[in-house]
Image 1 (tube, rainbow, N blue to C red):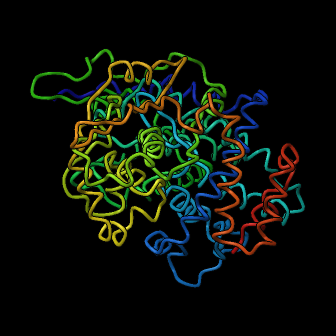
Image 2: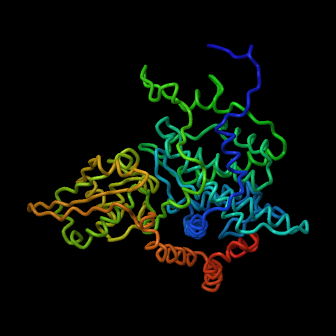
Image 3: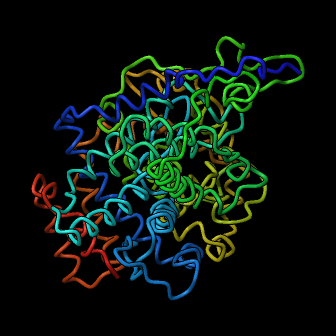
Length: 494
């Protein structure tokens, strides 16, 4: 084993870290499209968190570590009465907003949900706004939250475009931790050195394995992993602001850095990625591309690769609902990523297993004409044995064209096609849906549905008068930007 102890020269920070820090310190004004989309994202993400509070498996994780603890100027967890330190508040809100797999999505070489970062962003912003007012200073405004969201989306999404962490067994919440660390440190007032320190620790930190997302180990950790990551980002940012020294070669240090330890993988003697390629790749500058192109989950609380499949199943529902026992075969044509992530056969053991099963997310709307969060629960599954019988009749195959269009930056389609064959030799037409509701190509069509989704989610948590007050805040559009953060969060206190 080689050693570099005899060349103990402290290097400059890795260029990748410097690029991130420079982007975060860039005060350029985001595009109007990015700001408009960020307002929609804020609305939608808050609604997803509120809806999750109906599920005890989620709420059992929430609240102070020491029961009864109240933190002065603590961050609030929307939909609850908790006032917590920003680290735990970020964990709780991050857990809730992600619990039902209903918030936004980014699909590229790596997948993820950039609005996961709102857990840390809103918790820190709420605390800072309260603190500044208590000190006689102006409050933090919601415009700062929107700008932080845009930058967090960009960091997570741009790094995901060409870098597949899942192929080396790492979970995408690594990018949530990195993005949250950077934007939260900036909100706290970090200078360049503090930003570099914080970001270096995010990369050096132990990274989550994807084990809990895949059969046979899929489980509920995938619903709180992002909350854990955004919370850790807040903690690392706080440590950097207290003067914690950075790790300049966090990525590139031979033998000990992220690249050599975690971003390479061997299969016997065959390198998955040649050594000269074991670095983060980035083909475009950081800006606001990701927020402008983010995918919203409008119709279904389902893993995004299955959104168009569920939509196609809803279209087919009227043709098959009275012929379920006559079905001999269901042919599903999809893209490579869907096959790799969510195609599974055999027993489904828990809700987390079901909401990441392509076949299950098709079976439910074929039978019912809809797909809701409750349809993943154990009791529902046990009461509907016909769902597993349908799954057994499904055949999944890849379309090379669908896979190519999925990666095409000009298209970024998420296509699925379904055709159903019956025992008498007849069949339905093949129903193909390329772009789901919530895709940028269907953005304008989606807005009214997103607003309806938000109103429904509000109603699951608040009385009608409170719902109307919150809806009025979002109807202000650009006026939302000028709201003090702590007054905005006041509206969501349970």
